[in-house]
Image 1: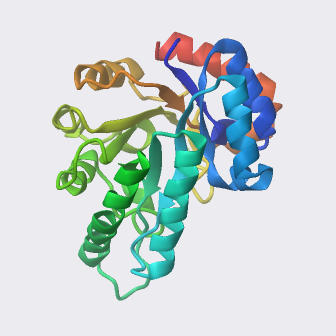
Image 2: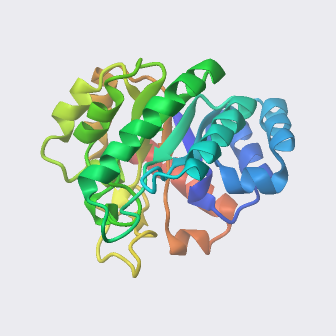
Image 3: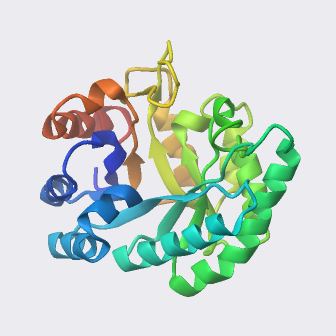
Length: 266
């Protein structure tokens, strides 16, 4: 349980301060999101986690590179700076979907590689690692053209492992028959390990379909064993986008999530 971390998205509408304080009470880390951080104030949030003694395990999110515009690069520079202020070692990247009907997926992925090449030195100077997160293929058109861990590792390979890494998120990669080979090949590059279950039917819009741990079909212990074998010993974030969970009180969801983590992951 000393590796448990709450991604704040799991309790999206729970006040950020209360979530941090709950993590402090059990010695857990927290993954933060830029929007609530901005709402509370960057400096105030940095002071909050520092005073509470809570480690910020990641900051979400950067990315959305595939439009090829300078605004995305500048926004990611700001995200890197925010992560550094918060003491977050990882900036999670959702790389972007297809910006229009005329942009092919190969071109979109090439733009991701170009953006990484520009941002990696800046991230390295700030002491923040860019963490490429592959998303399930159902999100390739609108959110992320990086669909497999193997693709993420290939994009990260040209850069130092301490500067560009990859995210293993069970919700997005559990289906991939090559995922465990990819985890092994990612040794030294795994930036973040996130867990969520896969349940069907998916809701309309599919984004909020992540199941509570133990409600679906993901073999979390197999993933944990593989990630551990690849040398990752860091925090394990529970990141759930789920409208039913979001409608419930944050403390209740937090307690349930800790219990499910103990039962199904730890």
